[in-house]
Length: 354
Ligand code: 9MR
Image (cartoon, rainbow, N blue to C red; front, side, top):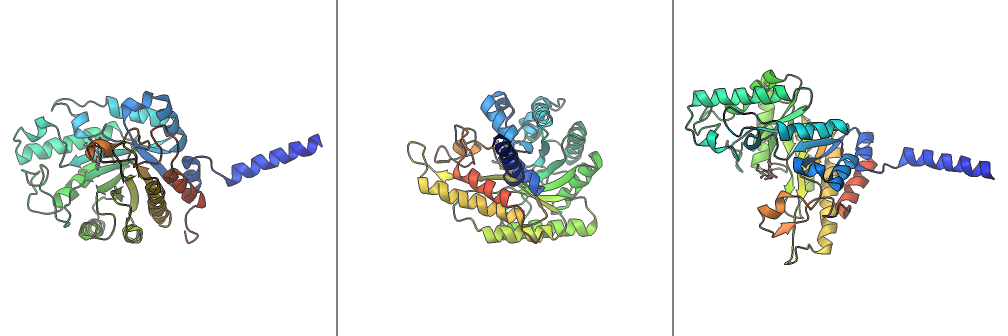
């Protein structure tokens, strides 16, 4: 009898380890997909934050720590301390690191935007920045958002410091400046995967058409681009999932990878800061649909949320408290319906066609 129950226990344990992943990262590892989140270094010393992060995710991205405004307090200084903290945490927990972001028209330090640099000086500053930062993280950051949010809602190139104010010397020449910085990035770290990352171009619209056309053109001419980051900050519960799936599929057909880079689904909150209970269920459906759309396309290789606990999210301050609860864990690190939906989809795996 004793013998039988031991055998039974061993068999049961074996079945559990074959059948059921216990965490998002276990399920994602089985699918061969990356599941990640943006992180803020000061929070890494909070035990509940750190243990949840290490347990659930196999990839991290610095929410801000690798942006110009943190890395470059002044022209002469590169301050890698916060970015290095993220890398150290990742290495200690066998996680990959995505880099974000080398070129963005917004949130640049005042010394950069207000010094009236010439195009030649700006071009030199940008190439030097890309080279120095990518070489510092070579072998540690496997993929970079090289350019972030360069297009407007019509798919036109946005006015910016790097494009035409005054730009790096390619003003008025559309996406040429984007191509130029991808070429610099490839030279700086030929092993890193290079992504174009964009907001609100996730479904089928003029912006996503323009991203598609740009990637197609870059690939045809041999400009170094490896992927497109779809941010997916979802502000409404009626997200058009079939359109997102179609966009992922058409990008993947260009032979680039797609990463979902900044997923969150924000909810309206009442005066006490609470969402409607039924919205949490609908939110889970949106998460489920997006994760499924990614899993169904072999070219979609990573899914990241923009933070993972409602305790720390950009949504609250951005919406002046009107919205929140956008992430898969609540403020006490308890999994929400959205977490369970992601877990179920990852556990179900990629579609049989792949
Ligand atoms: O969440 C980020 C917030 O903490 C920063 O203050 C802000 C400016 O650097 O950037 C936020 O992250 C943005 C990301 O870098 C690019 N896509 C939109 C994100 C939310 O605004």
